[in-house]
Image (cartoon, rainbow, N blue to C red; front, side, top):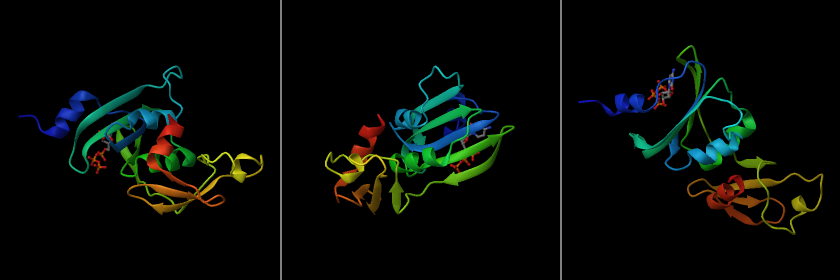
Length: 159
Ligand code: CTP
């Protein structure tokens, strides 16, 4: 019998150099690709695995991108919609770095406040700022107008 990890390898092979974003909650891989600005025409070799078994989170998605690194801003946005994700840096087929994500206490400039009256939507120099109220479920509060936003609001902005 083939073990479940071996089965995953059959679905998509290992990569040589690049980034593997693993343990993404099932169904969120497309939002992760959107955060990375990958639409297909950029030419990156990308493998997407959706809804496979995971020992840690039930079902998961995986995104593998060859020859691409993830910057801090991208990692912070991924944290908001996939807090269980790990970012693996692969060099010469070996995982050289594994980052576990953590939702920051404050999120600056990454997402827009949905309140059209908020100062951050009316002053070109203002930067949005949200305070993390809860992580599970995700709930953020705008530091300026005190509007609350949820994970669904963040996903809607990304997609
Ligand atoms: N991976 C890959 N190409 C490689 C090496 C690893 O695509 N050359 C992928 C693996 O398939 C896995 C992820 O990168 O999805 C992390 O690899 P590894 O740390 O070896 O797996 P696990 O030990 O199962 O990771 P974790 O502890 O995070 O569950």
